[in-house]
Image (cartoon, rainbow, N blue to C red; front, side, top):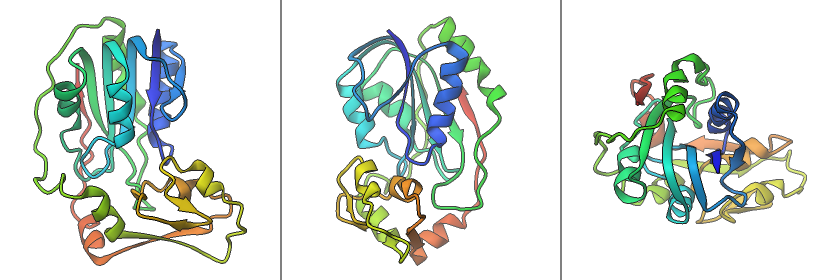
Length: 227
């Protein structure tokens, strides 16, 4: 079986996954739905969370066998971490291509989304003619693995406004059971899927001072492709 499988909260990783599915003629599947357990060619697309592999992606990789894996990580122009190397080292050796794609940071309203899809065509060509590669180890902040979910909760708050009508769509869309009636709990990882899903835009985010200072750092628009 060939497929493009994605995990996406704000729609950006889904847009990139859709590009690959269209170019390759592969079916597109959301990781949060039931996926196959065996793939011949798989393109995996997901966002980096606090320079780490999202837990849902780790679980997916533990439960599938892939003959030829292409792994695509999107990141918010701050730091992509070292997730591709970590995936190859811990979960999947048979990697044929990879990329770190800079796109809009979920916490920055006026940031630009990725739209230069022509730059990704070498990956499409490599998927069609697969051969294995060794992904390099990149620099990663040594503090990135220290309570990343707690740091996210402390850095950003999500509050409901008077626009909330109690539809509870936020709870239905949340993958982690981390919100109910617009109120988050300790399971929240601040992926902002609830914020993006709210039809009334009733959920608002507020950054703490440490996060504000972090987001003022110089951004990088570096696209890194491994073929």
